[in-house]
Image (cartoon, rainbow, N blue to C red):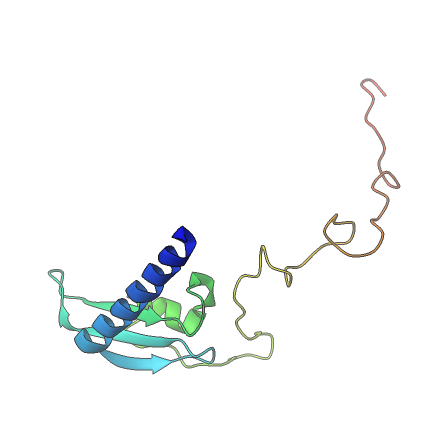
Length: 129
């Protein structure tokens, strides 16, 4: 019962936050993941307007691509152009640590299949040898 109440409160607060941002800010743009970026209509005491992101899915800070991260933190005045600029750049991916899509190195206990024998290339150090 408590869990149901908790999730109902989280949904209500999320709705109220989204509603407040849409009333008090203007939409600047969106990214490929569907996140939308907003800037307050009025500036704060330091003269800079507050900037917001409304996530398309679960609120995950690593889902903000670099072109929008700099804008959110007032590093750049305008968002950078979207998309890879050089052939070596890859598209932005959110941090997948702790999920089923996380990278597992060879020999990881969490990777499927047989683990690599860790003692195969290990040689113990002996003092004075």
